Image 1 (cartoon, rainbow, N blue to C red):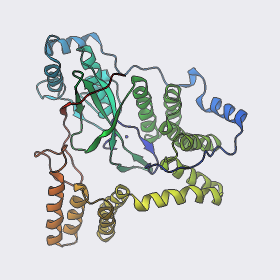
Image 2: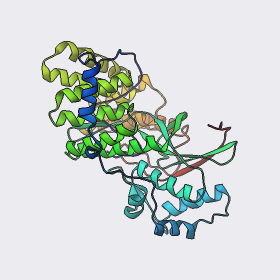
Image 3: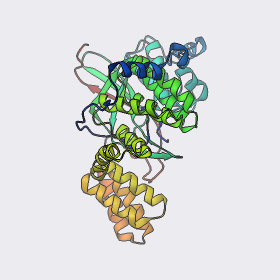
Image 4: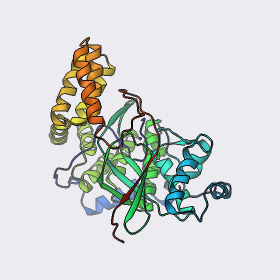
Length: 393
């Protein structure tokens, strides 16, 4: 999923966000028609992507891990050794690359990968060393990026595991982002596999291959049939293929499964606009507009977009509105500092830079070595050990 096509699910076109009730919208399809539509969209096993296990390690990589990590070491020592193995310049020296989702082996061979790719490699390596490791979906603040004619929203994933009954660890490959650990949750390998196929499908759309994307989304939905993001992305691919009715059904399915899925609502609104159905168009786009007008991170996105277009007056207004709705995000002040510098107001630029530093220091994930820059972030990996009672499941 863009510079952060990571560990996350990509949502194609516009945005997604907080929950609001909307009744199921498959109003044009009775049960038999829905069954026929599902069969047509999901196809047969031959219509899906090739089956892949992202956690497979070959013999050479297992031996490489065994040569660097002693199975008799403590769990914490193994975790730190795996970190060094993956990222130290004298070892694998794996770099962050948000452009492609890969298996553990592909990440090892390429020496680079996005967050899901890195998590695939870490989880596989940790389990090989008898270290508990699971995928964790992270509640990130929303961000949006523009890639060609496609808008993507990036989410995040990292690794979490149990050290003992009272202590867990979190391995994160992007310590520059802040997230709410209390709202993060581990997921089963099967759902991580669905994320893997969904990422590949979204990447295929971005690359201009919606037919390939459909195959990936079929695989994802076969594994997780109630995965709203995959249904939304399936609709985006089908729409590009001119299969409007199936695209509509897929977007409706996403909204039915997630009543706050603003990406799917926006997709439906634009689809109905193309059909000249103004009633339904307005039904969905009005909801999206109300959401956008109140969401600080969408306002931040618009501010950065205006900045990139050298419209500094508009950028200033968007960023001020974002700050009025959320006053503790250092990125807002950092961006506004850059805007004031372009406007020739060094005093306001310095004031906002000081605020950026102030709020930055309050966020645990930022470290002193990171550069304050509007567009460029350093990528590394952090490990946090935390004494927490983890209930058995």
